[in-house]
Length: 577
Picture 1 (cartoon, rainbow, N blue to C red):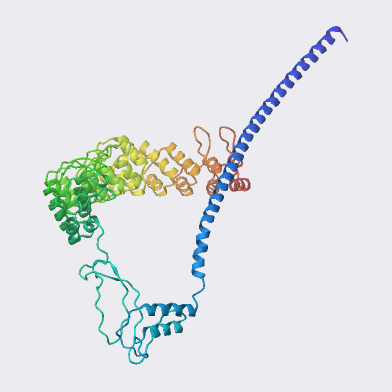
Picture 2 (picture 1 turned 90 degrees about the vertical axis):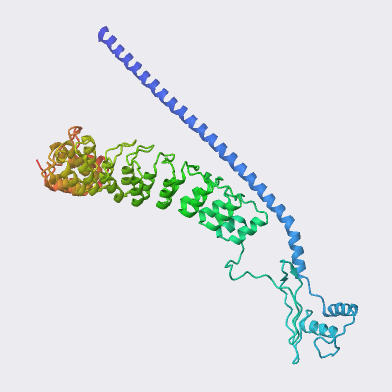
């Protein structure tokens, strides 16, 4: 071997050694990193275990304290329990002891002028009492005979006219005149209430005028507040107690006093629709423009409650057309409440139906959102604009399309004329039902046949709205790209009915996505829609076609573990070449 060859071999050996050393150093560094990570993890686990142990020790300490507290409480209570049990379980006094006690009582009693006939139940008190004790085992019982009888002692307390308890009634003897005694007061039948009102507020709520006058005469403050901050006038106004309102106003009740949610009695009456009370309060000086904590006026509350008579009464008295904190007018509140007659009345008073609130909503859009179609149609008859866009980029025509309000859409399209074409296109894409599509077909056929129609078809196919897809196909959507995109969207979402409709309309079953080269079969297999895969294969889909990364429908099904699709694709016999 020459020196050159040996030098070359040495160089190769050195290179391999250097490379091995480098690999070893990298491996060593990698292992060191693993060790560092494991040490950090172990440290974290140790900290967590320490916290757990600390928590357990604290819990044990709390349990010990609780156990000690319970033990002390039992030590305090048990002597008292034992004492009570001792009283109730102690033996009854003997018969001899009882008789001795009776003799002592009888000898100490003054001489009675009553007859002393031993057979009479009242002739000899000592003998009578002894007889009862002997017969009753130590307790006195009245004795009856043929000539007269006594009734058992009545132990119920008797109350005098002032509600004070008196002594129990003595035993009565048949044939004797009854002893006079005070009788307990009884509620009158006319009052109808077994429990009288406990406060001025309760009396006002019940409409008990006599009780209200009595409380006021006894010194109750006419403007006293309850726990909610309301006065008796608030309660009476809200409850519709006209007579009570008159009494309280006559006694000087403050008509503008603020109560719960900063409402005055006028707010309370208007919110409940009590027109007569509203009139009395206004006559007494209540402010019409007063606002509550929600920035609502008296008229706003009446409108929200649908009380048209109160609203019109207030407007006739000069109530200003004010908005609430959300910028809503009285007309908007009437629309939201669904009160068509009130809407008509407010429009008759000059209300502006195209005013927008803080969200950019109009009365018309609010009516569509709430589904008040009878009001929406009336507003459209009054030429309300269907194209005012709110801050969320919503407008009446678009929302009506989404909800499928076909007759409303038709009415809006009749008003569209040369309106915003972009809004019409967006509304068509949002079409929620077939009759909406037919409305567009009649009112804006050029849009249906153009790009907007194609976009609407894709959206409907993606959402599985079969009736809309069929309607759009019937009116002539013929943009090739849109038809193919609609087929792929239906396959991806698993809408077999839409797939059938599109294929029946002549869409190419093997049409490819321009960006991914995927066919409808790719999309269906990837998402696991077995019925769609079967339908596409039966209609001529080629399962060997690949996408832009060389994947067939079968490989996509395998990647995504779609067992049913894998089985269909592997066993389908018709291979389209």
